[in-house]
Each structure stands twice: as structure tokens, then as C-alpha cells.
Image (cartoon, rainbow over all chains, first blue to last red; front, side):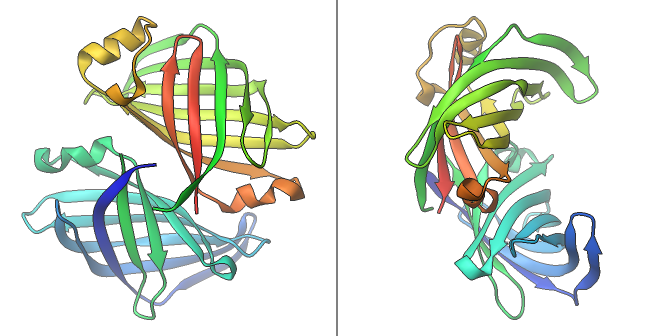
Amino acid sequence: MNARPLMRLRFTTAPVEEISLTPHGTLSIFPITGGSFEGERLRGTVLGGADWVTAGADGTRELDLRVTLETDDGALIHMTFTGVRDDANHYFRTLPRFETAAPKYAFLNRLLAVGVGEGHRDGPIHTIEEIL
Amino acid sequence: MNTRLLMTLRVTVAAPQNIAGVPHGTRRTVPITGGDFDGPWLRGSVLPGGSGDWLLLRADGVLELDFRATLRTDDGALISMRSFGLRHGPPEVMEALARGEAVEPAAYYFRTTPRFETSHPKYAFLNRRLAVATGDRRAEGPVYTIHELH
């Protein structure tokens, strides 16, 4: 598969909200309070959102994130991803999708992407590439 | 991005059901009648019952794909596959595809992101992996080359 860098995205998070055991697994909600993103074609800040994380019986966590990004020239971008985090196997991968009304960033509406996540104490960092 | 080949998946399709104009675009459902898949760790066939591709042509000309299929491996495991995808390209290329003509896959964007679910221990690794696929729309049905995100 061919890919090219899209952005590096950092989140800051608030204390987790533990919903605990639900019919689908153990649900934890990580509020996202801010952050930043930077790539050759776009950069800006994270306005906020959250990641709904469900841990399954096999220890892997399913991620379901929604955030709003604001570019440095004022465009708003709705970003979502689903993903899998399996720390035992050092696996933290996501499938981001984007929606925007800004013509300059409309290319985001037409691409699929993959992300590699890294856990950090002050919040995760995602390296996101466009699937070519 | 590190990936490795998971499988090549070929599906055969029946005549589409044109739902036509809906609030989000133009909807078309394509029943999947069968197919097969093979790769280094698994091979088998596509079951027709719960398999299909739910297509939505958006106002910006991009086709969204909501593909679902049940796979049966040659040793009897059932695997549920779902993938979201996008297809778009120059108008003349998309028109040739619509007419069922052979088009070089590099002439348009046709990518999907499969997820798998299974209860079979041998294939449980699929539950914990993301994948990306390159599609090739042929007259008899699409062919997907699926790579696991490593």
C-alpha cells in the first residue's frame, strides 16, 4: 500500500469517565480538551471532543473518537476515527475520516487514512497518513 | 505505514437495486452472490446470504461504500467482514466503470478499510487488526487486495 503523511496530531485529555461494564465491554470515555495538528497541507488546533473506548474480553480496546479541528486559517474539520489499541502487542492503529465544508480542505472528504498512535502521559499522539 | 498482504477477495454481484435519491445522495444496493478469497493465512468462499455493498453517491461525486460479507474459510470458520470505502475519479472514468467497461485500477481512487469479526480461535487475530484495501471494479464484480496494518 502507498501512503503519504497527512498530519501529526496531539491531544490533551481530561480525567477519564469510567462508565464501566456495559453489554459490549468496559466503556471508558476520554474527554479531549484540546491539542494541535501539523502537516505539510494543514495545521491548527483541536477544539475538543472525546474518545469512547470499549475494552473487550480479549484485552483489546476498540476506539471510537470524534473531535473538531480548526485550521490556522479558520476552517473547521469534523474528524472521527475507529481504531484498535492492544498494548500487550504494541498495536495502536486507527482509521481516521474527515468532513469539511472548506473548499481548500475538501480533499479530506475524498480520502481514507490510517493512523499510528503512541500513548503519552499527557495525551496520545497520532501519526496519520493518507492512503494513496 | 507497515502493511502485509492479508488476502485477495473476489466477489460476484447481481443486478443492483436502485433506491435512487435519498436525503444523503443517490443510494444503490448491490447484492453479492458469492466469491472467493485467498491469502497466506486463510482462504475460502464468500457466502451470498448476508453479503452486499450499500452504495451512496454523494453530492460531491464521491461514492461511499458500505460493504458487508460473510466469509467461510476452507476449514469451516465463519468470518464477518465489514468495510467502509470511497470510490471517485475523473467523470469519463466513472462513466466507463458504470457501463461495465474494463478500467485500469490506477485511473481512479477505490480504497476501503475492512474490519473482521470471528469466534474461531485460529482466526481470532483478525478481530484485533485493522486493514486497508485497494479495489478493482470489474464487470463481474470487484476484486479487493487487502493488506493488514502491521
